[in-house]
Image (tube, rainbow, N blue to C red):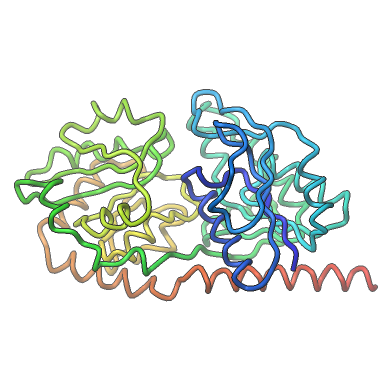
Length: 375
């Protein structure tokens, strides 16, 4: 199967869209398919993409105003040319909004079926960054996804949102986790002593540091006795968080095995963002055997079994986050039980398993298109 993955982000970017697109490409190559990735150019210009599992076509891009880590693709004929030259059987649109819209239009003109993967709560981002624009964001989302042969939602909450907003042909497709990299055995006592020299409970957040993530909700946790807050990630909110989270360790961006050691060395993982369509870092914390505190909204509703693998709290509620951490801090046995249950819950959610589910969606879409053509 020849697949063109049109993605709004791709490594070296570090975010959920980029990571999922990379894992998809890897899986397709591993299963004998022939993918091609189309993505925005990086800040340094066309990237060599030497670590990519397949060829990558880079489209000219500009930094998003106020958030230069995010690149927005410029109009380019490369998208349609790439789909045509690759002789694509199917087009995979990863979180389509700018580049994906062009990919959808090109697929339509070329008569190539398209699968659109919903991954980013753009309406929530519009509220956060502009204080308005939610309706316009949903109109754009509905327009591109309605043109796709199938839309794949990462969680039950996302699926319900899409259907409520009038998006047709929506199916569930979750995300995988690398349970070999992220595992309890990575727990590093030397690292723990470095992060918490007085033996404090280590409470961590991992992810982008941006307004929509609302990491400042950890402020109350910073005031708890014998607790050290550790924040891993980078983004436009980093400078402000230094003042908002007194005493917290802001470690910056970490990746690979170093990130896995940090996850496993936590005592509690907290995610604060209320706009997650899935929330991969929650799943990585669970794979690491760490109990989770997360908002009871969006993707975490599918991932966190309240009272068994972690605690769900009302979104945007700093007091609820603080109280949940205090509750777990006082009960080591409960933390251990939640961590073990979380690990057991995600061990079967490999990228290979969810990748095969994706190929199944492709196959169904192709069969349906062929049936229409034959009718």
